[in-house]
Image 1 (tube, helix red, strand yellow):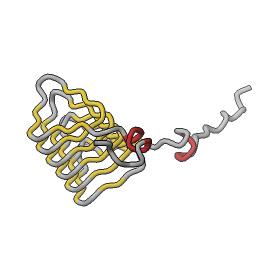
Image 2: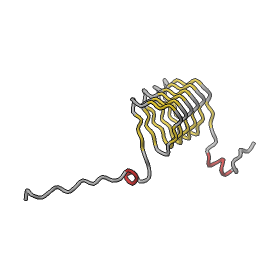
Image 3: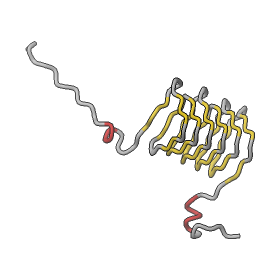
Image 4: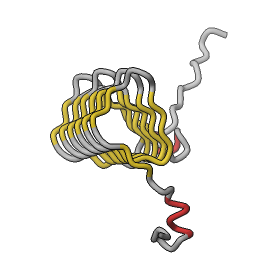
Length: 136
């Protein structure tokens, strides 16, 4: 009755736990100097000095990125000093951006600060159907 040992706890391995997706967090105490390329979704609260490329980016309010950002989706709340290229971009009211912004879909909260040009991109699907070139 009391001598039975509890069943061991099994935890899934990191590669199979999220069915092929990976999520990484760079905390507020992290500072990276250099380019960062990730096939993962990133949550950044720290400082990155270099170009950032990832699948999906969530930037915290205290975060600072000095360099270009390229992501499929991005939700920005901190400071970015560099160009931003994203299919789906959300700029929150606490964001401060110094650089050009290239997007397919864009949402900007009232109060966000952006110093740069906005340019709508043709979605990649339309470009692929047109053979990679735009019709004039």
